[in-house]
Image (cartoon, rainbow, N blue to C red; front, side, top):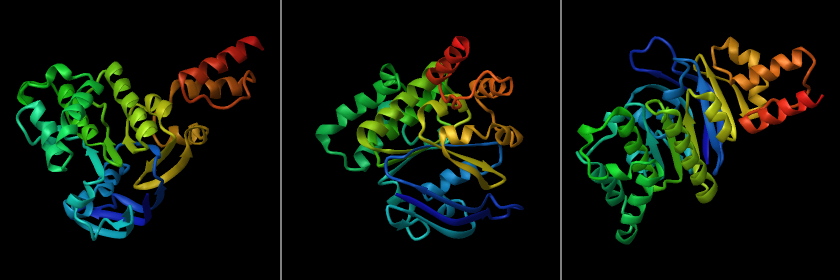
Length: 280
């Protein structure tokens, strides 16, 4: 469980708070999406969840954050990384080896994964994100999107209790993006992993996550189940947050008196909405 209590943080030398009076509880097995416009504090929140803030990025830290009962201020990131796996936007900053295989082996060996499990986990992680053919490639020869997949695979192979991802599909095409989220869904449902992901592709995000957290000006503007947050589409648009087109369509159909049902959150529910409208 992750508990955030009255958290505020301002980077050293910063003019404004990066996070301001945040309260949030993330339960074991949650699948949470974090959205918001640029500068809202999304990346900083991910840094808080893995101890990078305040241990690496220093500044004024107020409030309390606990992960599995451990206070992140009192616990070094190395300890937190035993149960929190992270994928940052700076992919090159992730890499510690020169070869793809060695990149995955580094984590598996350093986190004392039983030797007899290593090969199976390595093969599974590479296959899950579609890069089995890259196993023996040098990282320097890979594209940005391929490196992104390697970074994700390296974390997946460890199967941590909690995975925090900051825009994991930023360099990926639509098919690869969906593939990543399908893997995250499997990890969440099969292994009960807690998944926290910052993502700009709101439509894709809403299809998979269970809850949404919307940040605006360093604060939580709204939080709740996906459909509950999307019901506030006008508020989201005012904040500069992209709203899925199916939500805008539902809003328009309501205004014109054609639809009174729930806001669709994925293509399946959007299809049901259209069928209901056409039938009427």
